Image 1: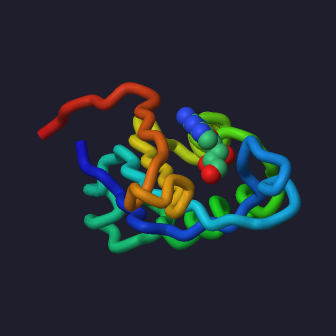
Image 2: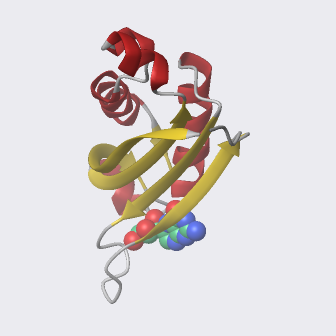
Length: 121
Ligand SMILES: Nc1nc2c(c(=O)[nH]1)N=C([C@H](O)[C@@H](O)CO)CN2
């Protein structure tokens, strides 16, 4: 199965478990792999035959701007549900990092995989 990628996408959102985090926007960094067969799009050279990474990046930015969660787990799960509902994504791997949350770490976060990844030639 082929993958459409979005790497190191910055997403501004209100997120965190502490009171001080509820009054400010923080930036999450997102990596997304989405399984799809790219051959129809390649054959026709047509963006409407594939997962449009520009449109999906805008959708993710809008999701961040319109939702507030405490946990990165909740953000990841709800975003994955939303994308799989709105786009033909059979399988995805979403990595969500919260840079600076643990000063001694480069980043902390979660990685989830949802759906079924079919292997094709
Ligand atoms: N597994 C998680 N642990 C923690 C989270 C989280 O979202 N998932 N969040 C926090 C705080 O919001 C922290 O990021 C503030 O610096 C702590 N642990």
